[in-house]
Image (cartoon, rainbow, N blue to C red):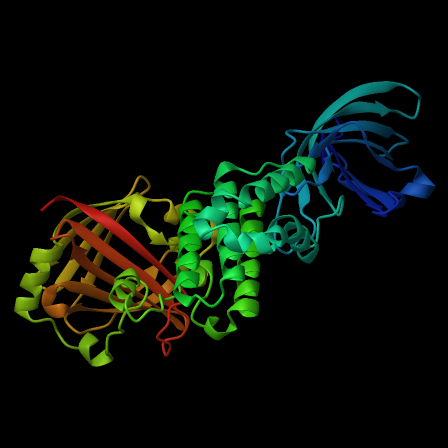
Length: 474
């Protein structure tokens, strides 16, 4: 789309179709609209000499997808009254690539600056300027997922299957030793495609190789396998909590899930259902002697669900007083102790990618107040972006409200453990979000465990997040 700042106020739309393998033009045509006379004209490339060409030396290679995009074009087309325009289109800025799951490959779409000349029917020319908008897709080729993961497997995972890795030590020793050369090879592959492997991505990749190498050679040590997966999971959550959502992050996540899932299925099939990799759930530690420690490690991942009759029972005055003593105060987020991903919890509830990514980066300050007479718990959440007040009724009734990112919701709340814990259950579509709040470390730390269950009848969450808050003032 081109808009010219000339006396006729011409607008031009040029469509150019080409054969990707050969680069040959399949068809080209233009539609010209004269703003002054409000008349329109359509011209064909062959009959009317419409020309659309790329400038070969003006290109941009995406650091995200590795695709080479054109950033400058030339256009020639008749307009009206026997006039012909010769225009040069230049990208306002080069990096205007859009990457989506549906678009294969990704596409370049953005504004351009326009300048050129108008050749009139009498042979005279005049300079003309304008602006425009160009959409370009189908240029270049993205590597298919299977092909890409096979390449990654050959250069990183395959070396971890060599017999000598069995004597390299535990998963940490493998990550700090034999995994390093494999990561170096991966970095070189990324450089060949004009992309960079960040330090954080290197840490996650070495953790994957360490866990994979140990599990592959020691599949019968169930407790150690579970610990290796948990260690890899911790490395991933530390990385995923600070990284932006981009192609490399999603590619690395997919690769980790596939490789860990594959090695668990092939080498540890007996415990595959109990050890699900990464951000879906943390596997339990399987040990008779270590059951108490395992239960402590899993405390925030497995919760007993509250019966509906408890939710419908009004809170007692003593429970309200106890809850006031436990939870009331000002609590500041401890970002270094977050476990799991709020991003994943919101994603399961169909929250938009930009909003959930923004919310997962916030560090709110909670002000909790228990109103004993009204049987209401008020939680005020303050961030750099906004201030949100929420009131949770613990009188056994259900209330309806509207969330700006999730739509209409129905909620109930109750007090558990004799006043030591607040529980809120909210219906989101056909699923349910459950939140528990309680204190730890002798009342100095507030723990918020948030999970989402895909159906109201299931007792296992599909995504969970545990956030810790430090007491600022009572």
